[in-house]
Image 1 (cartoon, rainbow, N blue to C red):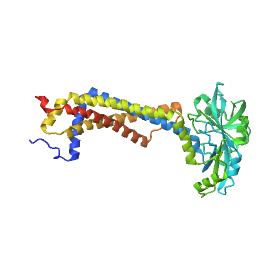
Image 2: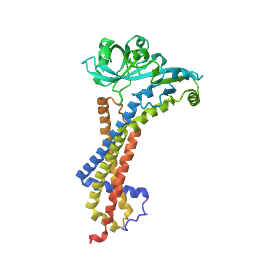
Image 3: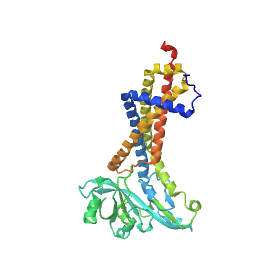
Length: 398
């Protein structure tokens, strides 16, 4: 039987033969194979969790801007994030109405206040959101039926997705109806619930009318607001109206589209805080650890089978075939570690999401990205380990 040549079989057949040999070599050392799969799975889970936390951070941080229904927004240039806004003159809202395409201007007020837990009396900071609830400038689940109730003095709607440290407000409201709580130094009545969710800037939210907001935040000057939502007439050119408003309004206000407002909030957490860098660095460390583990496994496997590789060379198999064997082993480890890692990550997403109230969910795009990263990690480890194949010399067998 003539020795096989590199050009005889087709490329697909050569690759399949190399993968079969790689799988048999890996399966021969079951303990080593289990260690390699565990290492890849660990890297996979670590990357999934880091990217999941990073995405949850941005999703939660931009939840309020995402819920805004207006086409344009006015904001002070020095505002870095919605949870700590820089007030701007309320008059800018009325000045914006000078543009014919602006149908409505809705001032929105944001502040942090002390909330007293109605169950145990403990205090915690909560975010207050004050606005004209009839203007439909914010689309929150459960807010629309409360428009009339929130007109009454000292009333508010509690965010059901707030952290449990604020107390079992949802259960108490469901059992007894409206309940009285203390916000700051004022007693208010929770007349309903909405759904928004906590963020890294606020653990809970309370929605009220702008009049009640000023009652609860007495230090707030009535002539100032934090954000202005501009509703345009149907069919208006958003970009053209934005240019007109920038020409009309003084330089102490920014005119942003909805996408620009969300991007501004996201950019703060990406660049002005170390959180985004930490999660990205954690993902990188996970990949490096996984690469080292896979490299050690492949290197040890090649070192333990040098005589077999030398025999294959003596039979006529070229260096390219041997390289494909190593890369095939790397691909097998990538797939074998990714599949259980994906399953474990889905379970952890549900567990951590329930415990932190963050929007942790597995997305197809993220799964594809992590698989590409894990495959590249194993492929890189395979390329490094291939250098050991140079020691497979048929002459050393004799």
